[in-house]
Length: 251
Image (tube, rainbow, N blue to C red; front, side):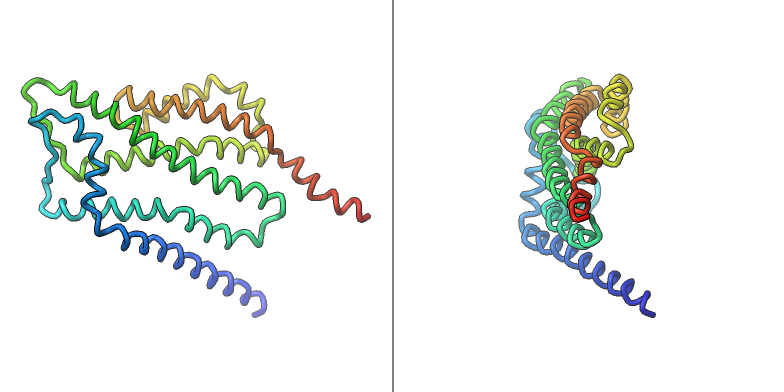
């Protein structure tokens, strides 16, 4: 019975943290839902700016004009609430971490959040104008461009996820090196394979055009190099020695 009690208390604490995380997302959503139509229009601006005069966005589903902005606002609410959601996760797992692990996790949580936001911003402000401009410019003569709002939303969310995930590469490199799975020198030796892998991932995560694939692969490679530089300044072995040093002094 004594062994079950800590488990139950941990489960209750986990439930509380999850409810607080969900509540934060819903709170942000309630604050934003009034501007759902404006948010969708802002999201559609990169496409609307490059559409020809005869082009437009359409809704092939009766309920799409309502549900598409609603869906986008809900996802945006989650993105905005991510720092608080990560804080709830951190507050739950922190008591079970060693000192050197806490020293690694806090910077990684902050940097991973910022990198994810940076990836989304890169996609919206840099990639979207180029990709949509290319797509609209190669339309055959006589073809009227009319993009469904649901299809557009799914397209941009896929790119947001791809670029947000790709910008987490420095964090992944640091974690792999810190955990002892690999080393900086090993990753440097495998750089040619990583270059090929970056373009393959770009092909899988982006639409089937060379522009968006390249615009994803190149930042991935630059972020990989950044991860290699950062990984040199953090070593698990050094952390463990720092952790054990006070104990040795006491003896």
